[in-house]
Amino acid sequence: MHKIHFKAPNCWINDPNGFIWYKGWYHLFYQCFPYSAHWGRMHWGHAVSKDLVNWEEKGIALFPSKTDDRSGCFSGSAIEYKDKMYIYYTGVNYTEEDPENINCCINDAFTAAQLMITSEDGMKFDNITDKKTVIPPIEDKKIGDKNHTRDPKVWRGKDAWYMVLGSTVDKNGRLLFYKSSDLKTWQYLNYCEKDGFGWMWECPDFFEIDGKGVTIFSPMGFFNDGNGYDSVAVCMLSSFDENTGKMELSENYQLFDYGIDLYAPQSTTDKDGNRVVIAWARMPEAVITEKGEWCGMMCIPRIVDVKNNHVYIRPHTNVKNSFITKLSAPKKSGYMLKTTLKNGESINVGGYVIKRENDKITTDRSEVFNIKGNYRLIAETPVINDGYELEIYVDEHLVEVFINNGEYVISNVVYGLTEEITGKNYDLYSA
Ligand code: FRU
Image (cartoon, rainbow, N blue to C red; front, top):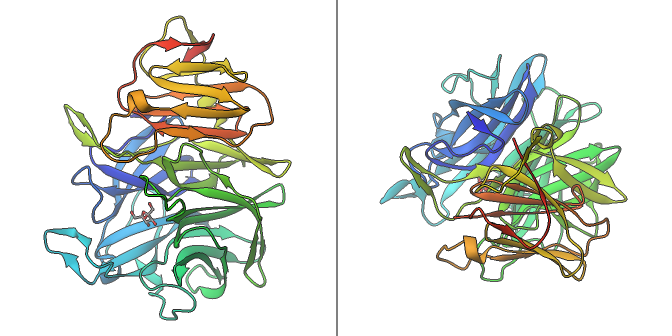
């Protein structure tokens, strides 16, 4: 059982996949290399939950079995239609394997196709007889790239199904849109691009909240500043025309999370119809335990709202409501801390320092991130408007700072928090 945060079960995990409320369960699939705490030939791991708080492991759902996915089952999504679960994902086929590690390829030599698999109950998947390639590797270089086209996200439109893929043309990231009336045959509609957002767009997502479109994607090479993780998840207000497949993206963008560690968010609707999104917290170093090594975890599921043309991202109500027991003394992790910060004030939470300066929240993890490499230690929000309230969820390896109920969020991976909290008054709650 995993509580609050789903963590890699003694192996490597990355992106959330196939996130869906289906037949009485939340299903969270995820990119997984089951044999070690490093990225390799991708499988889909599977976890289920009744409440988005407690997660139960279900083992491996998808594994390589066809020529088109022989080198990995990359990211994708799930929908429900006529009682069945339909999964769309990217199958990868390495054309040049690394002889020293056949789970990786060399020279970027692989092809990518989009595949479908269905399930009657969301628990059993027939990897041998039930996979179908629905979009073969793209041949037209003006439309997309035959290697770097991936991560299908499918949704129901007014009168048809739509799919968005991340891709690249001439070193510019882009989205590709497809349409289907039967979920099996997919017709290419259009693309959407925007300068200044890296060379390849991973894990796109599109949804509407009260009639406003929101597009999320993870552009690779976005920062291009030589620091660790130069890709990051961004969100933009948008509109999508179902007839033409044309997407308009707003001028302005927000980061999904200003800590830069979260990546590849994926959304679904929760059982009450809220838009809920979960993302992968990238961990530069595996955690070693008595039972083995694990690397990668999921953030708290978050509800997305749009108010005054701003995307708010707040902890899911079920998670928030489970931190009810008031704690009288600090502990190392597994708690939620509430405080307020005015300009010039700061709080040190077990070595993770949160400050408010010039109406921005900044964080500094230098004391709790003794990791080799040029990883970002300082994070900062844009200028905040709404108020002073902070809700900080502290896990042993992830601190999530929600500002003004989701106006902005900073989440950071940490190693070695202490029990000491200093600098400001606060209230503590445990789950
Ligand atoms: C994003 C990503 C996806 C891809 C998957 C492979 O982290 O690179 O684009 O499908 O991970 O594991």
